[in-house]
Image (cartoon, rainbow, N blue to C red; front, top):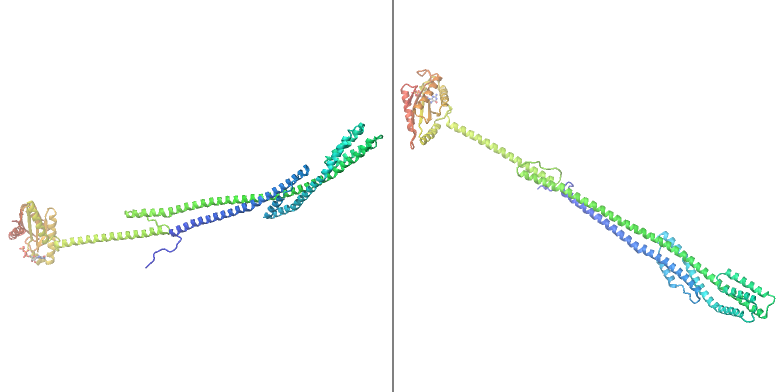
Amino acid sequence: MKDNRQGFSLKGIGVRLTLILIGVMGFYLLTTWHNIRALQEQSRGFSVLSGSHFERTMYAAELSRDAEVIAAQALESLMGARRTASDIPPIDQDLLRIYQNVRNEIEPASELERLQLAELDRWQKPYFDSLKKLADKLSEEQSFQLRQQEKLNDLLARLKSMEQGLASPEAIDPAFNAYALAALSYASLALSSEKAGQLRRLELSAHKILGYLKNLPSLSPFQQQYLSQLTPVVSDAFEFRRPVLVSQRASLAAVRQARLYAQKLTTSSYNYFLTLKKTAMDATATYQQLVSETFRMIAIFSVIFVLLMVLTVLFIREKVVRRLDDLQQVMHLHMEGKHPEIPVDGEDEISDMGKAFSIFVEARRKAEQELIEARQEAEDANQQLKTLNNQLQMLSETDTLTQIPNRRRFEQELQTLWRHCTRYSHPLCLIIIDIDNFKLFNDRYGHHAGDHCLYHVAQLLLQEMETCQGMLARYGGEEFVVLLPEMDSIQGKNVAEQLLSAVKAAELKHLGSPEGIVTLSMGIASCLPESGTVPYRLLQRADEALYRAKNAGRARVEVA
Ligand SMILES: Nc1nc2c(ncn2[C@@H]2O[C@H](COP(=O)(O)OP(=O)(O)OP(=O)(O)O)[C@@H](O)[C@H]2O)c(=O)[nH]1
Protein backbone atom coordinates (compact mmCIF):
# COMPACT_ATOMS: atom_id res chain seq x y z
CA MET A 1 0.00 0.00 0.00
CA LYS A 2 1.41 3.38 -0.99
CA ASP A 3 2.25 5.77 1.84
CA ASN A 4 1.00 9.23 0.85
CA ARG A 5 2.38 11.00 3.93
CA GLN A 6 4.92 13.72 3.12
CA GLY A 7 8.49 13.37 4.43
CA PHE A 8 10.37 16.06 6.35
CA SER A 9 10.44 19.19 4.19
CA LEU A 10 11.19 22.79 5.00
CA LYS A 11 8.46 23.75 2.57
CA GLY A 12 5.78 22.17 4.77
CA ILE A 13 3.69 24.75 6.62
CA GLY A 14 3.65 22.57 9.76
CA VAL A 15 7.45 22.21 9.76
CA ARG A 16 7.90 25.92 9.10
CA LEU A 17 5.50 26.91 11.86
CA THR A 18 7.18 24.47 14.24
CA LEU A 19 10.62 25.85 13.36
CA ILE A 20 9.38 29.42 13.82
CA LEU A 21 7.89 28.63 17.23
CA ILE A 22 11.06 26.76 18.25
CA GLY A 23 13.09 29.75 17.07
CA VAL A 24 10.96 32.21 19.05
CA MET A 25 11.09 30.02 22.14
CA GLY A 26 14.85 29.55 21.69
CA PHE A 27 15.30 33.28 21.40
CA TYR A 28 13.21 33.76 24.53
CA LEU A 29 15.28 31.17 26.47
CA LEU A 30 18.52 32.68 25.16
CA THR A 31 17.56 36.18 26.23
CA THR A 32 16.34 34.92 29.59
CA TRP A 33 19.60 33.00 30.10
CA HIS A 34 21.57 36.09 29.09
CA ASN A 35 19.59 38.30 31.49
CA ILE A 36 19.99 35.81 34.34
CA ARG A 37 23.73 35.71 33.73
CA ALA A 38 23.89 39.49 33.60
CA LEU A 39 21.95 39.71 36.85
CA GLN A 40 24.25 37.10 38.45
CA GLU A 41 27.26 39.10 37.27
CA GLN A 42 25.77 42.28 38.67
CA SER A 43 24.88 40.56 41.93
CA ARG A 44 28.41 39.21 42.25
CA GLY A 45 29.86 42.61 41.38
CA PHE A 46 27.61 44.26 43.88
CA SER A 47 28.63 41.73 46.55
CA VAL A 48 32.28 42.40 45.85
CA LEU A 49 31.55 46.08 45.90
CA SER A 50 29.73 46.01 49.21
CA GLY A 51 31.74 43.21 50.79
CA SER A 52 35.17 44.32 49.78
CA HIS A 53 35.47 47.81 48.44
CA PHE A 54 33.17 49.50 50.90
CA GLU A 55 34.43 47.42 53.83
CA ARG A 56 38.02 48.23 53.05
CA THR A 57 37.09 51.82 52.44
CA MET A 58 35.49 51.91 55.85
CA TYR A 59 38.64 50.38 57.32
CA ALA A 60 40.71 53.03 55.62
CA ALA A 61 38.37 55.69 56.95
CA GLU A 62 38.64 54.19 60.44
CA LEU A 63 42.41 54.11 60.11
CA SER A 64 42.49 57.76 59.15
CA ARG A 65 40.10 58.65 61.98
CA ASP A 66 42.10 56.62 64.53
CA ALA A 67 45.30 58.36 63.53
CA GLU A 68 43.54 61.72 63.91
CA VAL A 69 42.12 60.77 67.32
CA ILE A 70 45.46 59.52 68.56
CA ALA A 71 47.17 62.70 67.36
CA ALA A 72 44.51 64.86 69.02
CA GLN A 73 44.85 62.88 72.22
CA ALA A 74 48.60 63.37 72.16
CA LEU A 75 48.08 67.13 71.83
CA GLU A 76 45.57 67.01 74.63
CA SER A 77 48.15 65.22 76.77
CA LEU A 78 50.65 67.93 76.04
CA MET A 79 48.20 70.69 76.92
CA GLY A 80 47.35 68.88 80.12
CA ALA A 81 51.05 68.55 80.97
CA ARG A 82 51.50 72.27 80.60
CA ARG A 83 48.49 73.11 82.72
CA THR A 84 49.35 71.08 85.75
CA ALA A 85 51.80 68.40 86.60
CA SER A 86 49.14 66.24 88.22
CA ASP A 87 46.66 66.40 85.34
CA ILE A 88 48.33 64.58 82.43
CA PRO A 89 45.96 62.06 80.77
CA PRO A 90 47.63 58.88 79.54
CA ILE A 91 47.69 58.09 75.80
CA ASP A 92 44.93 55.57 75.16
CA GLN A 93 46.57 52.21 74.55
CA ASP A 94 43.23 50.82 73.30
CA LEU A 95 43.29 53.22 70.37
CA LEU A 96 46.72 51.97 69.37
CA ARG A 97 45.49 48.40 69.57
CA ILE A 98 42.34 49.18 67.59
CA TYR A 99 44.39 50.95 64.95
CA GLN A 100 46.63 47.93 64.63
CA ASN A 101 43.65 45.57 64.40
CA VAL A 102 42.07 47.67 61.68
CA ARG A 103 45.33 47.74 59.77
CA ASN A 104 45.62 43.95 60.02
CA GLU A 105 42.21 43.61 58.35
CA ILE A 106 43.34 45.40 55.22
CA GLU A 107 44.88 43.52 52.32
CA PRO A 108 45.91 45.35 49.14
CA ALA A 109 43.80 44.60 46.07
CA SER A 110 46.01 46.34 43.53
CA GLU A 111 49.58 47.53 43.01
CA LEU A 112 48.55 51.08 43.79
CA GLU A 113 46.95 49.95 47.06
CA ARG A 114 50.04 47.93 47.91
CA LEU A 115 52.25 50.99 47.42
CA GLN A 116 49.90 53.16 49.45
CA LEU A 117 49.74 50.60 52.28
CA ALA A 118 53.57 50.40 52.20
CA GLU A 119 53.61 54.20 52.60
CA LEU A 120 51.14 53.83 55.47
CA ASP A 121 53.27 51.15 57.12
CA ARG A 122 56.37 53.27 56.58
CA TRP A 123 54.99 56.00 58.87
CA GLN A 124 53.16 53.71 61.23
CA LYS A 125 56.16 52.57 63.33
CA PRO A 126 57.83 55.98 63.65
CA TYR A 127 54.46 57.43 64.57
CA PHE A 128 53.78 54.95 67.35
CA ASP A 129 57.43 55.18 68.49
CA SER A 130 57.06 58.95 68.63
CA LEU A 131 53.86 58.55 70.62
CA LYS A 132 55.68 56.27 73.02
CA LYS A 133 58.51 58.73 73.22
CA LEU A 134 56.05 61.53 73.84
CA ALA A 135 54.35 59.53 76.55
CA ASP A 136 57.72 58.84 78.16
CA LYS A 137 58.65 62.47 77.85
CA LEU A 138 55.40 63.64 79.35
CA SER A 139 55.81 61.16 82.18
CA GLU A 140 59.36 62.33 82.72
CA GLU A 141 58.27 65.96 82.71
CA GLN A 142 55.53 65.15 85.16
CA SER A 143 58.01 63.74 87.68
CA PHE A 144 60.40 66.59 86.91
CA GLN A 145 57.69 69.14 87.65
CA LEU A 146 56.84 67.38 90.91
CA ARG A 147 60.48 67.61 91.92
CA GLN A 148 60.72 71.30 90.91
CA GLN A 149 57.56 72.25 92.76
CA GLU A 150 59.31 72.26 96.14
CA LYS A 151 62.16 74.29 94.78
CA LEU A 152 59.72 76.72 93.28
CA ASN A 153 57.82 77.13 96.56
CA ASP A 154 61.08 77.70 98.41
CA LEU A 155 62.25 80.15 95.80
CA LEU A 156 58.97 82.08 95.85
CA ALA A 157 59.15 82.24 99.65
CA ARG A 158 62.71 83.53 99.48
CA LEU A 159 61.77 86.13 96.88
CA LYS A 160 58.84 87.22 99.02
CA SER A 161 61.09 87.44 102.12
CA MET A 162 63.61 89.54 100.16
CA GLU A 163 60.84 91.80 99.00
CA GLN A 164 59.56 92.21 102.59
CA GLY A 165 63.13 92.94 103.75
CA LEU A 166 63.06 96.16 101.76
CA ALA A 167 60.21 97.37 103.95
CA SER A 168 62.31 97.22 107.20
CA PRO A 169 63.35 100.52 108.97
CA GLU A 170 66.97 99.93 108.03
CA ALA A 171 66.21 100.06 104.28
CA ILE A 172 66.43 103.80 104.07
CA ASP A 173 68.20 104.29 100.73
CA PRO A 174 65.48 104.61 98.09
CA ALA A 175 67.91 104.07 95.15
CA PHE A 176 69.25 100.86 96.68
CA ASN A 177 65.71 99.72 97.35
CA ALA A 178 64.61 100.46 93.77
CA TYR A 179 67.50 98.53 92.23
CA ALA A 180 67.01 95.62 94.60
CA LEU A 181 63.29 95.55 93.79
CA ALA A 182 64.14 95.57 90.04
CA ALA A 183 66.49 92.60 90.50
CA LEU A 184 63.68 90.77 92.36
CA SER A 185 61.26 91.62 89.53
CA TYR A 186 63.64 90.17 86.93
CA ALA A 187 63.92 87.02 89.03
CA SER A 188 60.12 86.78 89.32
CA LEU A 189 59.74 87.30 85.57
CA ALA A 190 62.29 84.52 85.00
CA LEU A 191 60.00 82.07 86.81
CA SER A 192 57.30 82.65 84.21
CA SER A 193 59.58 83.05 81.21
CA GLU A 194 58.69 80.74 78.25
CA LYS A 195 61.73 81.19 76.07
CA ALA A 196 65.44 80.70 76.69
CA GLY A 197 66.40 83.98 74.98
CA GLN A 198 64.04 85.95 77.12
CA LEU A 199 65.43 84.18 80.20
CA ARG A 200 68.98 85.13 79.15
CA ARG A 201 68.04 88.78 78.63
CA LEU A 202 66.31 88.86 82.06
CA GLU A 203 69.38 87.23 83.66
CA LEU A 204 71.75 89.77 82.06
CA SER A 205 69.59 92.62 83.29
CA ALA A 206 69.40 91.13 86.81
CA HIS A 207 73.19 90.55 87.00
CA LYS A 208 73.79 94.08 85.68
CA ILE A 209 71.69 95.51 88.56
CA LEU A 210 73.40 93.21 91.07
CA GLY A 211 76.83 94.41 89.76
CA TYR A 212 75.71 98.02 90.06
CA LEU A 213 74.54 97.46 93.67
CA LYS A 214 77.83 95.77 94.59
CA ASN A 215 79.80 98.71 93.22
CA LEU A 216 77.93 101.32 95.22
CA PRO A 217 80.55 103.36 97.26
CA SER A 218 79.01 103.51 100.67
CA LEU A 219 76.97 100.44 101.49
CA SER A 220 75.47 100.18 104.93
CA PRO A 221 75.88 96.95 106.85
CA PHE A 222 72.18 96.21 106.26
CA GLN A 223 72.63 96.80 102.54
CA GLN A 224 75.75 94.61 102.38
CA GLN A 225 73.96 91.81 104.20
CA TYR A 226 70.82 92.24 102.05
CA LEU A 227 72.93 92.16 98.87
CA SER A 228 74.74 89.00 99.99
CA GLN A 229 71.34 87.32 100.40
CA LEU A 230 69.80 88.82 97.24
CA THR A 231 72.52 87.59 94.84
CA PRO A 232 71.99 83.78 95.40
CA VAL A 233 68.16 84.16 95.39
CA VAL A 234 68.25 85.88 92.00
CA SER A 235 70.76 83.36 90.63
CA ASP A 236 68.65 80.43 91.94
CA ALA A 237 65.57 81.84 90.19
CA PHE A 238 67.33 81.76 86.82
CA GLU A 239 68.97 78.40 87.56
CA PHE A 240 65.56 77.01 88.50
CA ARG A 241 63.86 78.24 85.34
CA ARG A 242 66.53 77.08 82.83
CA PRO A 243 66.02 73.27 83.18
CA VAL A 244 62.25 73.77 83.15
CA LEU A 245 62.48 75.54 79.79
CA VAL A 246 64.80 72.84 78.46
CA SER A 247 62.34 70.16 79.58
CA GLN A 248 59.39 72.01 78.01
CA ARG A 249 61.29 72.46 74.77
CA ALA A 250 62.08 68.75 74.66
CA SER A 251 58.40 67.89 75.27
CA LEU A 252 57.34 70.30 72.56
CA ALA A 253 59.83 68.75 70.18
CA ALA A 254 58.43 65.28 71.00
CA VAL A 255 54.91 66.54 70.38
CA ARG A 256 55.94 68.15 67.10
CA GLN A 257 57.62 64.92 66.09
CA ALA A 258 54.49 62.92 66.95
CA ARG A 259 52.35 65.51 65.21
CA LEU A 260 54.50 65.30 62.08
CA TYR A 261 54.27 61.52 62.01
CA ALA A 262 50.55 61.71 62.69
CA GLN A 263 50.21 64.05 59.74
CA LYS A 264 52.19 61.66 57.56
CA LEU A 265 50.10 58.73 58.78
CA THR A 266 46.75 60.47 58.35
CA THR A 267 47.81 61.75 54.92
CA SER A 268 48.81 58.20 53.88
CA SER A 269 45.65 56.66 55.26
CA TYR A 270 43.57 59.43 53.70
CA ASN A 271 45.26 58.82 50.33
CA TYR A 272 44.56 55.13 50.76
CA PHE A 273 40.98 55.98 51.65
CA LEU A 274 40.72 58.14 48.52
CA THR A 275 42.07 55.29 46.40
CA LEU A 276 39.63 52.80 47.90
CA LYS A 277 36.84 55.31 47.54
CA LYS A 278 37.73 55.77 43.87
CA THR A 279 37.85 51.97 43.44
CA ALA A 280 34.46 51.69 45.10
CA MET A 281 33.10 54.50 42.94
CA ASP A 282 34.52 52.81 39.84
CA ALA A 283 32.93 49.51 40.92
CA THR A 284 29.64 51.34 41.50
CA ALA A 285 29.92 52.94 38.05
CA THR A 286 30.66 49.50 36.56
CA TYR A 287 27.68 48.07 38.38
CA GLN A 288 25.48 50.91 37.16
CA GLN A 289 26.80 50.38 33.64
CA LEU A 290 26.00 46.66 33.92
CA VAL A 291 22.50 47.47 35.11
CA SER A 292 22.03 49.99 32.29
CA GLU A 293 23.37 47.43 29.82
CA THR A 294 21.00 44.80 31.16
CA PHE A 295 18.04 47.15 30.86
CA ARG A 296 19.13 48.10 27.35
CA MET A 297 19.49 44.45 26.35
CA ILE A 298 16.15 43.59 27.91
CA ALA A 299 14.56 46.47 25.99
CA ILE A 300 16.22 45.38 22.72
CA PHE A 301 15.31 41.72 23.28
CA SER A 302 11.76 42.69 24.18
CA VAL A 303 11.40 44.74 21.00
CA ILE A 304 12.89 41.90 18.91
CA PHE A 305 10.68 39.38 20.69
CA VAL A 306 7.55 41.48 20.06
CA LEU A 307 8.60 41.98 16.43
CA LEU A 308 9.16 38.24 16.02
CA MET A 309 5.77 37.52 17.53
CA VAL A 310 4.11 40.11 15.24
CA LEU A 311 5.92 38.64 12.22
CA THR A 312 4.88 35.15 13.30
CA VAL A 313 1.25 36.23 13.61
CA LEU A 314 1.43 38.01 10.23
CA PHE A 315 3.06 34.94 8.68
CA ILE A 316 0.36 32.64 10.08
CA ARG A 317 -2.34 35.06 8.98
CA GLU A 318 -0.88 35.53 5.49
CA LYS A 319 0.41 32.02 4.82
CA VAL A 320 -2.19 29.95 6.63
CA VAL A 321 -5.40 31.71 7.62
CA ARG A 322 -5.90 33.84 4.49
CA ARG A 323 -5.02 30.98 2.15
CA LEU A 324 -7.32 28.60 4.04
CA ASP A 325 -10.11 31.22 3.82
CA ASP A 326 -9.47 31.65 0.09
CA LEU A 327 -9.44 27.89 -0.45
CA GLN A 328 -12.60 27.45 1.61
CA GLN A 329 -14.35 30.21 -0.36
CA VAL A 330 -13.25 28.67 -3.66
CA MET A 331 -14.50 25.26 -2.46
CA HIS A 332 -17.90 26.76 -1.53
CA LEU A 333 -18.15 28.47 -4.92
CA HIS A 334 -17.32 25.19 -6.66
CA MET A 335 -19.98 23.48 -4.56
CA GLU A 336 -22.42 26.17 -5.74
CA GLY A 337 -21.55 25.27 -9.33
CA LYS A 338 -19.24 28.19 -10.04
CA HIS A 339 -15.72 27.64 -11.25
CA PRO A 340 -13.24 30.20 -9.85
CA GLU A 341 -9.54 29.47 -10.15
CA ILE A 342 -8.25 27.17 -7.38
CA PRO A 343 -5.18 28.56 -5.56
CA VAL A 344 -2.32 26.04 -5.79
CA ASP A 345 0.69 28.34 -5.25
CA GLY A 346 3.49 27.06 -3.01
CA GLU A 347 4.60 23.63 -1.97
CA ASP A 348 3.07 23.23 1.47
CA GLU A 349 0.07 21.39 2.88
CA ILE A 350 -2.39 24.12 1.90
CA SER A 351 -1.16 24.17 -1.69
CA ASP A 352 -1.35 20.34 -1.61
CA MET A 353 -4.96 20.65 -0.45
CA GLY A 354 -5.59 23.08 -3.32
CA LYS A 355 -3.94 20.68 -5.77
CA ALA A 356 -5.89 17.73 -4.40
CA PHE A 357 -9.11 19.72 -4.63
CA SER A 358 -8.13 20.82 -8.13
CA ILE A 359 -7.61 17.17 -9.12
CA PHE A 360 -10.96 16.32 -7.57
CA VAL A 361 -12.67 19.18 -9.42
CA GLU A 362 -10.99 18.19 -12.67
CA ALA A 363 -12.05 14.55 -12.16
CA ARG A 364 -15.56 15.70 -11.39
CA ARG A 365 -15.56 17.97 -14.43
CA LYS A 366 -14.39 15.08 -16.61
CA ALA A 367 -17.00 12.79 -15.10
CA GLU A 368 -19.69 15.39 -15.70
CA GLN A 369 -18.40 15.93 -19.23
CA GLU A 370 -18.44 12.20 -19.82
CA LEU A 371 -21.91 12.03 -18.31
CA ILE A 372 -23.06 14.84 -20.57
CA GLU A 373 -21.48 13.13 -23.55
CA ALA A 374 -23.02 9.82 -22.51
CA ARG A 375 -26.36 11.54 -22.13
CA GLN A 376 -25.89 13.18 -25.49
CA GLU A 377 -24.94 9.86 -26.98
CA ALA A 378 -27.92 8.26 -25.31
CA GLU A 379 -30.14 11.06 -26.56
CA ASP A 380 -28.62 10.69 -30.02
CA ALA A 381 -29.10 6.94 -29.84
CA ASN A 382 -32.61 7.50 -28.57
CA GLN A 383 -33.23 9.96 -31.35
CA GLN A 384 -31.73 7.54 -33.77
CA LEU A 385 -33.89 4.84 -32.33
CA LYS A 386 -36.88 7.09 -32.61
CA THR A 387 -35.96 7.82 -36.19
CA LEU A 388 -35.47 4.15 -36.82
CA ASN A 389 -38.74 3.47 -35.06
CA ASN A 390 -40.38 6.15 -37.12
CA GLN A 391 -38.75 4.75 -40.17
CA LEU A 392 -39.81 1.31 -39.10
CA GLN A 393 -43.22 2.68 -38.39
CA MET A 394 -43.19 4.34 -41.76
CA LEU A 395 -41.91 1.18 -43.36
CA SER A 396 -44.55 -0.87 -41.60
CA GLU A 397 -47.18 1.62 -42.66
CA THR A 398 -45.77 2.55 -46.05
CA ASP A 399 -46.00 0.63 -49.22
CA THR A 400 -42.55 -0.20 -50.40
CA LEU A 401 -43.26 0.11 -54.05
CA THR A 402 -45.36 3.26 -54.23
CA GLN A 403 -44.03 5.02 -51.09
CA ILE A 404 -47.51 5.87 -49.90
CA PRO A 405 -49.38 4.45 -46.85
CA ASN A 406 -50.15 0.78 -47.15
CA ARG A 407 -53.35 -1.01 -46.40
CA ARG A 408 -52.45 -1.57 -42.76
CA ARG A 409 -52.01 2.16 -42.26
CA PHE A 410 -55.21 2.77 -44.14
CA GLU A 411 -57.18 0.49 -41.87
CA GLN A 412 -55.80 2.20 -38.76
CA GLU A 413 -56.72 5.59 -40.15
CA LEU A 414 -60.14 4.31 -41.17
CA GLN A 415 -60.78 3.16 -37.58
CA THR A 416 -59.59 6.51 -36.21
CA LEU A 417 -61.67 8.60 -38.61
CA TRP A 418 -64.60 6.35 -38.09
CA ARG A 419 -64.54 7.04 -34.34
CA HIS A 420 -63.92 10.74 -34.92
CA CYS A 421 -66.79 11.14 -37.36
CA THR A 422 -68.99 9.05 -35.06
CA ARG A 423 -68.26 11.32 -32.13
CA TYR A 424 -68.82 14.55 -34.08
CA SER A 425 -71.46 13.22 -36.47
CA HIS A 426 -69.40 14.08 -39.51
CA PRO A 427 -69.71 12.31 -42.85
CA LEU A 428 -66.87 10.11 -44.05
CA CYS A 429 -66.28 9.53 -47.77
CA LEU A 430 -64.26 6.64 -49.23
CA ILE A 431 -62.92 6.19 -52.78
CA ILE A 432 -61.56 2.94 -54.16
CA ILE A 433 -59.34 3.42 -57.22
CA ASP A 434 -58.32 0.65 -59.64
CA ILE A 435 -55.95 0.94 -62.60
CA ASP A 436 -57.74 -0.25 -65.70
CA ASN A 437 -56.45 -3.29 -67.59
CA PHE A 438 -53.29 -3.49 -65.60
CA LYS A 439 -52.81 -7.11 -66.36
CA LEU A 440 -52.45 -6.16 -69.96
CA PHE A 441 -49.93 -3.48 -68.99
CA ASN A 442 -47.83 -6.07 -67.22
CA ASP A 443 -48.17 -8.38 -70.06
CA ARG A 444 -47.14 -5.77 -72.60
CA TYR A 445 -44.45 -3.86 -70.73
CA GLY A 446 -43.33 -6.35 -68.15
CA HIS A 447 -43.79 -6.58 -64.43
CA HIS A 448 -41.01 -4.15 -63.73
CA ALA A 449 -42.65 -1.49 -65.87
CA GLY A 450 -45.86 -2.37 -64.07
CA ASP A 451 -44.17 -1.58 -60.82
CA HIS A 452 -42.93 1.70 -62.16
CA CYS A 453 -46.41 2.53 -63.42
CA LEU A 454 -47.87 1.80 -60.03
CA TYR A 455 -45.33 4.12 -58.44
CA HIS A 456 -46.00 6.86 -60.99
CA VAL A 457 -49.77 6.71 -60.54
CA ALA A 458 -49.41 6.72 -56.76
CA GLN A 459 -47.22 9.83 -56.86
CA LEU A 460 -49.67 11.60 -59.17
CA LEU A 461 -52.54 10.81 -56.82
CA LEU A 462 -50.49 11.86 -53.80
CA GLN A 463 -49.62 15.14 -55.44
CA GLU A 464 -53.29 15.87 -56.08
CA MET A 465 -54.25 14.96 -52.54
CA GLU A 466 -52.12 17.80 -51.20
CA THR A 467 -54.88 20.28 -52.07
CA CYS A 468 -57.54 18.49 -50.07
CA GLN A 469 -57.68 17.00 -46.65
CA GLY A 470 -57.64 13.28 -46.92
CA MET A 471 -55.57 10.18 -47.00
CA LEU A 472 -54.29 8.14 -49.95
CA ALA A 473 -53.16 4.52 -49.50
CA ARG A 474 -52.36 1.49 -51.60
CA TYR A 475 -55.16 -0.95 -50.94
CA GLY A 476 -53.48 -3.87 -52.66
CA GLY A 477 -52.34 -4.95 -56.17
CA GLU A 478 -53.24 -2.15 -58.55
CA GLU A 479 -55.93 -0.73 -56.19
CA PHE A 480 -55.69 2.51 -54.18
CA VAL A 481 -58.05 3.93 -51.59
CA VAL A 482 -58.78 7.51 -50.47
CA LEU A 483 -60.37 8.54 -47.17
CA LEU A 484 -62.03 11.96 -47.06
CA PRO A 485 -63.25 12.91 -43.56
CA GLU A 486 -66.13 15.36 -43.20
CA MET A 487 -67.01 14.94 -46.92
CA ASP A 488 -70.13 13.58 -48.44
CA SER A 489 -70.45 11.73 -51.79
CA ILE A 490 -70.70 14.88 -53.85
CA GLN A 491 -67.55 16.37 -52.39
CA GLY A 492 -65.91 12.97 -52.69
CA LYS A 493 -66.88 12.72 -56.33
CA ASN A 494 -65.23 16.10 -57.04
CA VAL A 495 -62.05 14.84 -55.51
CA ALA A 496 -62.28 11.62 -57.49
CA GLU A 497 -62.84 13.51 -60.72
CA GLN A 498 -59.82 15.64 -59.88
CA LEU A 499 -57.71 12.56 -59.35
CA LEU A 500 -58.97 10.94 -62.50
CA SER A 501 -58.14 14.00 -64.54
CA ALA A 502 -54.67 14.24 -63.08
CA VAL A 503 -53.75 10.71 -64.07
CA LYS A 504 -55.32 11.10 -67.42
CA ALA A 505 -53.44 14.31 -67.95
CA ALA A 506 -50.21 12.50 -67.23
CA GLU A 507 -50.87 10.36 -70.27
CA LEU A 508 -48.96 7.36 -69.11
CA LYS A 509 -48.61 5.16 -72.18
CA HIS A 510 -50.72 1.99 -72.07
CA LEU A 511 -51.30 0.58 -75.52
CA GLY A 512 -53.28 -2.24 -74.03
CA SER A 513 -55.89 0.26 -72.90
CA PRO A 514 -58.65 1.47 -75.26
CA GLU A 515 -57.54 5.05 -74.77
CA GLY A 516 -53.85 4.17 -75.18
CA ILE A 517 -53.04 5.69 -71.78
CA VAL A 518 -53.34 4.61 -68.19
CA THR A 519 -56.81 5.30 -66.84
CA LEU A 520 -58.51 4.77 -63.51
CA SER A 521 -61.89 3.50 -62.35
CA MET A 522 -63.24 4.70 -59.01
CA GLY A 523 -66.06 3.74 -56.67
CA ILE A 524 -67.24 6.25 -54.12
CA ALA A 525 -69.24 5.72 -50.95
CA SER A 526 -69.94 7.94 -47.98
CA CYS A 527 -71.91 7.70 -44.76
CA LEU A 528 -72.51 9.20 -41.30
CA PRO A 529 -70.82 6.69 -39.05
CA GLU A 530 -72.85 5.65 -36.07
CA SER A 531 -71.84 4.36 -32.73
CA GLY A 532 -71.53 0.61 -32.55
CA THR A 533 -71.07 0.18 -36.34
CA VAL A 534 -67.98 -0.87 -38.35
CA PRO A 535 -66.72 0.55 -41.68
CA TYR A 536 -67.00 -2.73 -43.48
CA ARG A 537 -70.24 -1.73 -45.16
CA LEU A 538 -68.76 1.48 -46.43
CA LEU A 539 -65.93 -0.44 -48.09
CA GLN A 540 -68.35 -2.85 -49.54
CA ARG A 541 -70.48 -0.08 -51.02
CA ALA A 542 -67.41 1.67 -52.54
CA ASP A 543 -66.23 -1.59 -53.99
CA GLU A 544 -69.67 -2.18 -55.53
CA ALA A 545 -69.51 1.29 -57.03
CA LEU A 546 -66.09 0.46 -58.49
CA TYR A 547 -67.45 -2.70 -59.88
CA ARG A 548 -70.12 -0.72 -61.57
CA ALA A 549 -67.53 1.69 -62.98
CA LYS A 550 -65.62 -1.23 -64.44
CA ASN A 551 -68.66 -2.65 -65.94
CA ALA A 552 -69.68 0.68 -67.31
CA GLY A 553 -66.58 0.89 -69.42
CA ARG A 554 -63.86 1.89 -67.01
CA ALA A 555 -62.09 5.24 -66.78
CA ARG A 556 -64.87 6.74 -64.75
CA VAL A 557 -66.27 7.41 -61.31
CA GLU A 558 -69.29 5.73 -59.81
CA VAL A 559 -70.99 6.75 -56.61
CA ALA A 560 -72.67 4.18 -54.41
N1 LIG B 1 -46.55 -5.38 -62.13
C1 LIG B 1 -47.35 -5.64 -61.21
N2 LIG B 1 -48.49 -6.21 -61.46
C2 LIG B 1 -49.42 -6.49 -60.47
C3 LIG B 1 -49.19 -6.17 -59.20
N3 LIG B 1 -50.23 -6.53 -58.40
C4 LIG B 1 -51.14 -7.09 -59.23
N4 LIG B 1 -50.65 -7.04 -60.49
C5 LIG B 1 -51.26 -7.49 -61.63
O1 LIG B 1 -52.44 -6.80 -61.92
C6 LIG B 1 -53.27 -7.59 -62.66
C7 LIG B 1 -54.68 -7.48 -62.35
O2 LIG B 1 -55.40 -8.05 -63.27
P1 LIG B 1 -56.95 -8.16 -63.21
O3 LIG B 1 -57.38 -8.39 -61.81
O4 LIG B 1 -57.25 -9.21 -64.04
O5 LIG B 1 -57.56 -6.85 -63.72
P2 LIG B 1 -57.30 -6.02 -65.07
O6 LIG B 1 -56.38 -6.65 -65.87
O7 LIG B 1 -56.71 -4.69 -64.53
O8 LIG B 1 -58.65 -5.78 -65.59
P3 LIG B 1 -59.72 -4.84 -65.05
O9 LIG B 1 -59.46 -4.61 -63.61
O10 LIG B 1 -61.00 -5.55 -65.16
O11 LIG B 1 -59.63 -3.67 -65.84
C8 LIG B 1 -52.73 -8.99 -62.54
O12 LIG B 1 -52.19 -9.42 -63.73
C9 LIG B 1 -51.67 -8.88 -61.50
O13 LIG B 1 -50.61 -9.72 -61.77
C10 LIG B 1 -47.95 -5.58 -58.85
O14 LIG B 1 -47.62 -5.27 -57.75
N5 LIG B 1 -47.06 -5.34 -59.92
